[in-house]
Length: 433
Length: 141
Image (tube, each protein chain N blue to C red):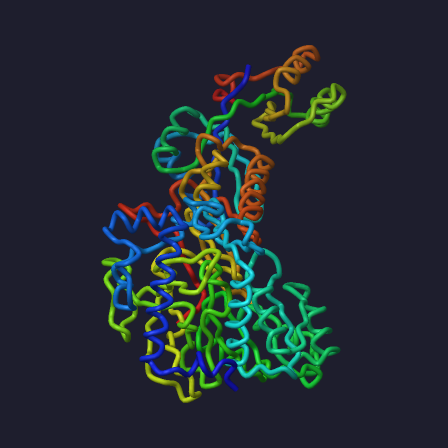
């Protein structure tokens, strides 16, 4: 099944023409409505008339997460907030979150692209979709929710957590589709095994998993343990949320909804565009968004593009499963974390050295975050209680900012390797081959 | 009135204590008393040594998280009940002890302790005619 055959199966020539028209309309809108973009375009000697087709896209300046932060919260919105009917915020935690605003039309677009995503994954109106993504400012829960309703499936908005209850609901409501992060899917699978729950009592057949990187090995593990088809979906709140791209039943790359989001691949160092098959940083231009349209937004995700039509019949370009990032952002249990956030929290506490090491591991299929912190000699007196309370203080500051549990370990002065220039701050032991 | 105790923060890793003690041994610094307080992940070594200031500098040079801490030391005769008597005096005055250890040499014994309120503890000790040890006396012991 294809949700929107007109948009998902058009010829390359038609797609390029459509993208060109929408791009020039977008540029006109942001030029006149977003002072930030107007200034950037003027600096580059560009006016709205300079952008007429898709080839002109490369003339435009990039947008980064820092630009969103510098204009926090609503500075890059292209419409007054009277036109905005929903806000979401990214789970990014470097200082301020990035806020995204949706107009009524944006929400309709979002539902449309998630409807395509779900249909792409083989989900139909007779399915029961259990949404175990978090609901709230995070786009995962509500994004899947509206898409599920749009295709007419039965949406079960459980939100995240409470594994026992998730399984109870799956059994009682005959859930056929599970939407959550891949690591939570694995955790659920293990739980079913450990609790010796009869697998036949769970009627799952498909999973739509995203919000964090996962490997083919993990996919195989989920598929065999839960006896389902595990579909990779991709999205980020800045662009719209889930619904940016999705695998189809052939699982050979993720179809990008490029009539709404034009993808490009650039060299993250030189910022030069790369040819389609080369791996580089993924950049999106949101050509239909009204509330927060973004021009050449650098996702920092590394992938490549494939324009060959797919066996499923869709002509939408496919992006390879993301393999990594061009910055140091870590995704731990679906939460975006930068080492610099952890560093600034440690410096704020004052009694620790700015020497720390972040260790991420996957224990029983759950990501665990450990932070080793050097004790400052100046502050080390000799009471156990004092050290324990310091450890607690660091832990609670980290946990309240990051929103996930953190294991803090105090280590001796100079145990963490010093190096010239950029020192190694993160050891990721998760197997992401 | 107070003596200098040398304290070191150590992770629970094999060989760390031996390295710290070798550092003192190589400098001919004699250890008079040593105690370790430990948790699952780290420990604090507390020592009375012949030359705390130099021991402190050498340990810091070697990268140990060491510090000098002022502690109270009481001399008692090495006989049954004397430790208990000294403690009773402190508890009668409602002075709570953060940590304490003791050692004896021939007929003399020394109690080393740290309390929440050092001034109040010193005053109580003197008022009750307990003998306080200073840094030099400790080395003689």
